[in-house]
Length: 352
Image 1 (spheres, helix red, strand yellow):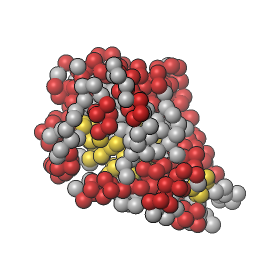
Image 2 (cartoon, rainbow, N blue to C red):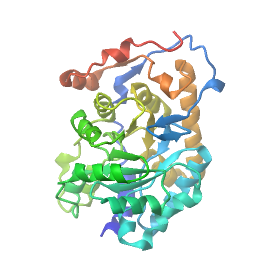
Image 3 (tube, one colour):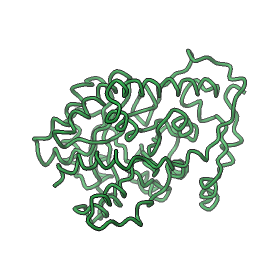
């Protein structure tokens, strides 16, 4: 049953943790010994399409749809409000099928009445369902998540994926808020990025591997596991570099295994406009408590400010001029796929 799965997913996400193999270790940032700025001049606000965010970090979709998950969303929403972070709720399909669990999603807007809140549905959703999901939480934007491999491994998951792109295109055209198309941890590559852009999508979240592993989670729920699929997908760094060959900077979000300020800065330097984090927030909340969660969010933003100062980049957009050398498996992948990474190594800081 869909509702009972929600806490199972939370349990397995915490139990399995994150691999950390999101590819960002292959990105080396060029040190700037003459940054010519100070921490007080750093601006963290950023734009994703038509969305304006006060911070490049946002709390990505995690949960909802069960009484037990309401408290998780409440605490996350309070942190989002106090730290000025955008926040996405988990898939709302459960609430569209049973109004009894609507409060587990509505709590996010109640606790953060003026913040940026994203609704969330899968690609099976209709336009009418998308409009209802947005209305339910007075959403600032709508996420449409792509989770084909998760569904295929899930014992009770979907087995038919015909018409996905057509439904997404209809939602983008009809819903009156920005639409973000997001992978859940297997990555978007340029071929599908191109299809999405041609369908009218203007914001994508690459959702790469390295964080919460939904293949492993669903395998943990199966009587006979398909463990040979646990490593399916593409690291976040690869998915980001692939997608940026199709989508312009200012329209791409990086999510997948990012747990600290340095990893976040690397994703931003590669060209992301914002960085989504889910598993890291959930782990701190469930293992260390609410106060630790607030500290963690504050330390993230302080760390990003510190690193932007060190790099001489006073804005997120300025980070796109910071030199970075891409090595290892990420560089090998890009070479095989014809993605030019020399531009990253040879560009110059704004202050130089």
